[in-house]
Amino acid sequence: MSSTPNPTFDAVLAAAKAGDSIAFEQLYRMLNRRVASFAAARRAADPEGVVNDVFIRVFKNLPTFEGDQDRFIGWVFQIARNRLIDETRHRQRRVDELLLAEQPTTQALVAVDDEALSQIESERLLGQLDCLTDDQRDVVLLRVVADQSLEVVAASLDKSVGAIKSIQRRAIRTLAREFEEIVPEAVSR
Amino acid sequence: MSEFDVSPFEMDDNSLSETDIEAVLAGDQTAGPDALHDLISGLRERFEASTDVPVGAALAEFIDVVDLTTTSTHTESRRNRKMITGIGTFIATTTGKIVLGTTVAAASMGAAHAVDMVEMPGLPESSAEVIVVDNSEDSEETVPTQAHDESNAMEDEDTKEDETEEVVIKEEAIEKSDGEDSEGEGTKDRNHGQMISEFATSTELEGCEKGQAISELASSKHDDEDQDESDDAEEEDENDDEDELDDDSKDHPCKDDDLDHESEDSDHEDEDEDEDEDHEDHDEEHRGNGKAKGKSNKPDHDDDDDDDVDES
Image (cartoon, rainbow over all chains, first blue to last red; front, side):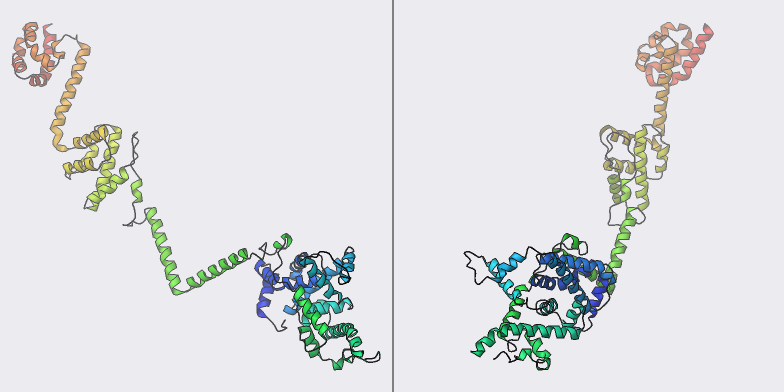
């Protein structure tokens, strides 16, 4: 995402703040898919519901928002992130699902459909991010899944760009170290 | 590597540039371990949304579309906005202004014609719908057509209006069913016969009403004054006869019709012998011309009455 000023976005944002439903729709179209991807990667039980809740909050508080495009997108993902944190805190029944996802390769499954396989693979990938902290995970997901810039991620986590760079560096190193534990064992032989 | 060895990714940050990190996050497989590349690419493929999220009922209060996936309403609203914008742009041009002005002028002229403010040759006359309140039972509101036909038949516009008024007047006369000729006095200066024929051919009336209307119209002619007088005299005679019948006995010979007068000339002579001198001239007239007798007897009857009174 470009951090340069966008007059078109500014006009749309101003119209949306004035209550124009068409401008609301444009903002929704711009971000709804990426918010849904981020919610799904954060293991949201209902990613589409999260998207609707996020944008309801965005449109309700839009008159009080001040900032450019990057700050607005960051503000949207900040709302989404807080929404997902609240959901995680109240999620107890997913423990069994996580336990099931941890041992897919060792369990002998009699009949599994494609959707279940896809879900298992997704859980495997997300499981590799469990070694990261919450901020490192969110930075990686915002950069990779939501495809956002450093400025947007900084606005989402309410941190500086330098801090975000440091966080993502540590995240990559941690992930690499996890993979290196497998590779060094092969190299040392 | 031993446990004391340090991997490049655990080294100081200066050995790992931002470019390398950005390359890894962007999916560049030349930088970093393959497992990391698989993770990054896998996350993008698994969790990247391909379609818009449907709008729920609560969010629909802010957005006028229920389901963005259909996009029909949104497209229609955009299409309407584009249409309105296009029309406004067209009107802003010179051609658009001319077209708009012409349209407005035509509409205003039509409205003016509808309220009889302006007469448009090509449009039907709304005034034809006016008028003659025909209270008769079989009123067919044919006056509009009649007036229109008459106006087309006449060459002079003034006569058109006069004819129309005349027809209107005549039909009112029919409704009143009286023999007033005062209203026909306005046709003195025109060809009365032509007027009557035109009326007879153009009128929508039928049967008795038509004949009565024509007769009324014809009776308004000045050349028929004599006939009217004779008719009036006949009417008066009939009225007098009726009066005499009321006063005198029914067998009185003067009360009878003309034919009775002729047949009873001898009776007159026999019964009124004393009045022969007075009746001689009248008897001859009775024998010769019953009508003459009837007419001429008018004063004579009065004299006879006087004589009767004198003799008695």
